[in-house]
Image 1: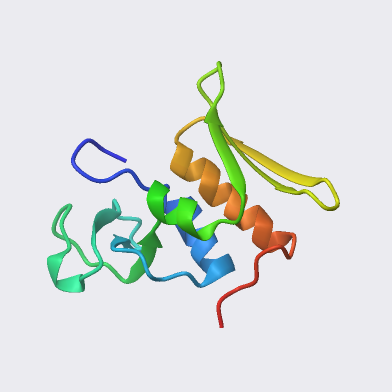
Image 2: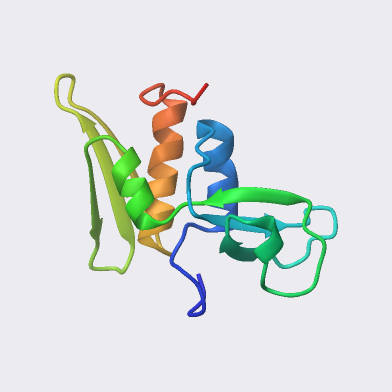
Length: 128
């Protein structure tokens, strides 16, 4: 994310995680017009306060920050590797099953990708 806003996972990661999880309790949101392919805007979850340019926004997706993702994900590790990439890992200690993802862009994207993989593996279940 830019210097002007909070650090959140990218719009594609947030869109995919929202589709997998249904999690919609963040204080930040991405606003975008997918048909016009306008630049997305990031702002507080209040449609009347959208910033980032004058435009029409037909979609809103929750924007997941590091604190939110850290709270909702079960036992996980997150660290920065020597090559600058962020690695996020979840492990089931009873079966020793491990799910690991890496992101070269941000720790938020690493945790968002881990969450998506946990939903895909059936470890996490979509909110009703």
